[in-house]
Amino acid sequence: MAKKKKKAKKVLCHACKGLCCRYMALPIETPKDRGDFDDIRWYLAHKDVSVFVEDGDWYINIKNKCRHISEKDHRCRIYEKRPRICRGYKTVDCEFTSDEYDYSLHFTNDKQMEEYMKVKFDNNKSDHPINSLKKRKKKARSKK
Ligand code: SF4
Ligand code: SF4
Image 1 (spheres, rainbow, N blue to C red):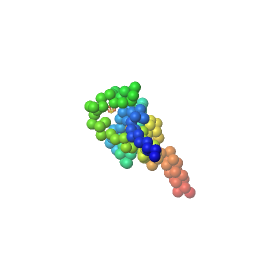
Image 2: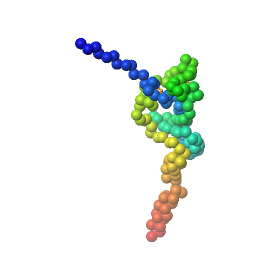
Image 3: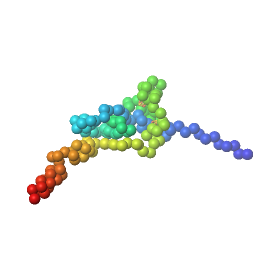
Image 4: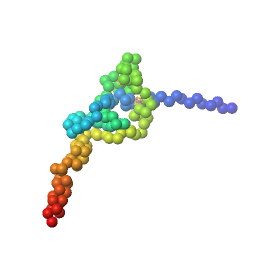
């Protein structure tokens, strides 16, 4: 009887170029008013910065690789003394394995935030062009 070939243990990181070592995602305060959203617009004016919302929590993502990742084999050069955050990071659901993220919002530049703010804050304002037009029409009707 032919011997069954032993399946090689799959080590995900071997096939990956160290994606998780090439950015930082940090929680930020949930924006409440226009000023808070405008501050986020400022973050987004910077290159390689994005902001996303996951499970109601807001995060800033800064694409910037760690100085300790090797460009030759994409391994950590200080593996034995890597920081706590790196030690706690698991391959389960890391960006290499998951196909898509569960973002409810994802901004990749300040223009997107500007558009979002327009809808969020200006669409309900009484001095918004559409609302002013509605008001004028209403007035005109009541004069008849
Ligand atoms: S944890 Fe995931 S993203 Fe990080 S190196 Fe391994 S496979 Fe790549
Ligand atoms: S210290 Fe090592 S494991 Fe941590 S981010 Fe840098 S290269 Fe990656």
